[in-house]
Image (cartoon, rainbow, N blue to C red; front, side):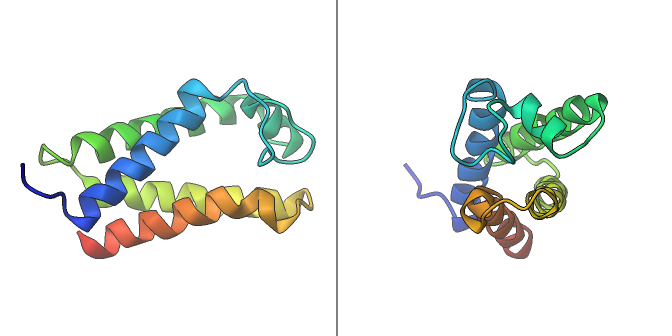
Length: 123
């Protein structure tokens, strides 16, 4: 079995991480939720975002995750998907700042931003 490239490893980490947050842990409380939110949907409300934003951002992140994961084996627009994730993570960081969250709550978004930027740079 051939070793995966650094970009491919990052693609899997970012893609699986996004799917975990949105499809597995979306209804679970974590110490990284913005404001006093207990679920992912509550987090969007805590940020003062309209209800539809939850679905739009969710669709974009799940779609990007699928492209990143499948892009390890199939020619897909991986750079564009990673750039989209990076942009969304900048937005997430801005929302954490908006509600005055402590820096630790922003750590997952910052790490995802860094990994997504690295994918863009490596591809």
